[in-house]
Image 1 (cartoon, helix red, strand yellow):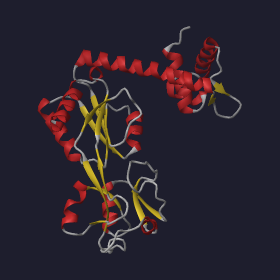
Image 2: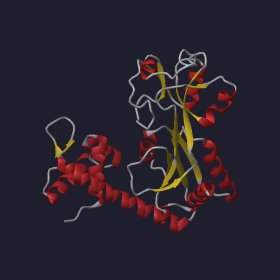
Image 3: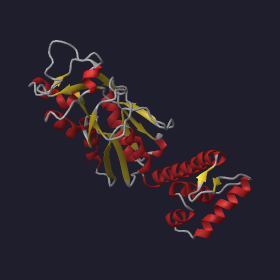
Image 4: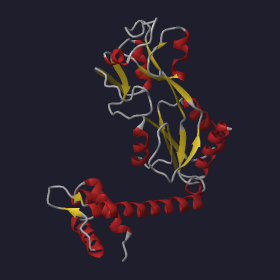
Length: 294
């Protein structure tokens, strides 16, 4: 039995795009050519990969398993291309890093600054995302590295630990929760107030508030906006220590006294592909991050 990369590519495209026609367009192939590839694949495997009873192609249980291994084939092909390109040129044409916006950019910026001395032609792109979207963006943008505070699904990636940081549950001192001074706030009291969150999706990250159902939510796009919303007394929420040091000192923000944990420690990590899959500039960036960890 032989499965070609062309068949695996067509199979993956149909799943990603939803229809044979859209897959054909994305691959710059004719509809009949892609249909032939998937039908010959099913014939060779003697398996039905799609349930075609509905409007959209839906994977069968067998199809889900075959897709997993086809994608491993395609990943191996991409890895081989990356290795060959690095062997041929040394300096990679581009380097992309996805990082969680809750992490202090200073450590990332310091590592990137060290790259200036190499005068490399490599184009460096740094993109911020938040929580679970970091790994999603790493996948969709085919990035080289990512910095995240969450466990990841891709076990083949290697990790470099970065500097830990703390998060505090805070409000403005004049917010109704912030006015409490003599006792610890109960969960029910927190539930009755607006909780400010980055992003609409809920990603449990080990905070004491993860499982609380608040009466209302205020969603923002990033932590700097979240900080401004809390300063405007629009609600309360978690902010990283590096972002609120000044405000806590001058008492324009306050760590809430609560029965639940009001501080939490996070250990961000830089995840990257195996060393041989990374070009010269990527290798230098990894060295910069390791020096910070020493």
